[in-house]
Length: 555
Image (cartoon, rainbow, N blue to C red; front, side, top):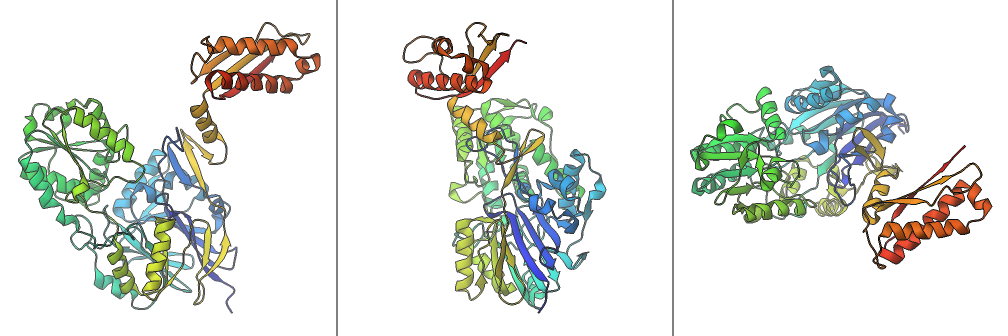
């Protein structure tokens, strides 16, 4: 019996959509040589993570085993798969492998953090492979909503594993490689131990539509528009950006790209040869001299991001351009769950300006980049894996995908973040449970989710904050009454007097009754003053604010 094992461990992306990070290992238990697939981010929201810039997977387990890591492989350039590469490089220091377009985006991120170009290695598509310890890894082209997406063919001493990455089955994707069923059958014919598979659209019952299907509908819409047309989509969906630009050109309109992310993606596509025939564009400055009915702006901000071009146009001007009554704004995108409020805010702002807004509720102007249920079944029928392990989905998606696999005669394994699966032999087992979680990029500092920083920020946001300052002289006597500074609390309460005056009066009375032992003890002083502020605030405004007490002693 072999003393070595093949393991799969999701650290992010299994049980959630976003923040993808997966680990494969082979070797003696605890001494496995490791490869990492994708290092992505998730995005914060004001409800749960106020002020946070990015959410990263907790890679503590990997950091403790950095000497065992052979390489990092990035399947494609979406932020939820590539966004953490530069933020985690210092801790992992492993070579990063990606195809040309993805490598271009990764290098830009690495350079922004002061790392050299040689940290990212460009790899060609299958059949080229990379040797990484006991693993041999190849990038197998698959269609998605960003150029050069790849599944990974991972050969191990214990058999072949295919990691699907994000994918759809599109034979006419317009940009990037079409899905090649024959190639996939060829790669799978020797037997596949496990297919680790995208689960995002497992509940969508109809077959996925091709990117080519939206072009005619968008062209018709733009041709019929009378005023200026503005359209937004995911900046990384280069095929859609091109479809929108082509539609504008057919309608006799000049194309303007607005938003740094969109320009960066188009530049990367052209630099790497992914995009050869993108229409010429005009600058926002030159666009001001072109009649509105002859303009089409392609802008960032399809998810309601406050600083993106869409939101800024909704609030007024952006780079000298503004929307007017009779203009058309198109959302050629799907709103990601959780982003609805931001998108609706923009729609209403445009409505107030007299702008006509068209979204994808008709299904005409957007197609998903992920495989629907029939497409998931088709891929698994081609690959015929011994085991199917769903990934890239919330728990309900993973569970449904396992049911689907078992209904089709396969073994399905539901593995969420932190669940290490032993794929050795013929029957997968759960080998260990690893503590996983998330870390936050807060400004330029990474903090732990349990460090209390965000928790305290939420509490202050919910309850307000009072700072109490007290000066004590050399003889342990208060030097005057304590005074208060209020932030985020009402100025007056039930007594109709200024809240700060009521608080200071009650604090002064408590202090006048305090015994010498309390006055000598900073901890007791702080505790007593804090309690009075919270009690008085509850009586006056019905809330207990967060309280900071500062006791200064004269020496």
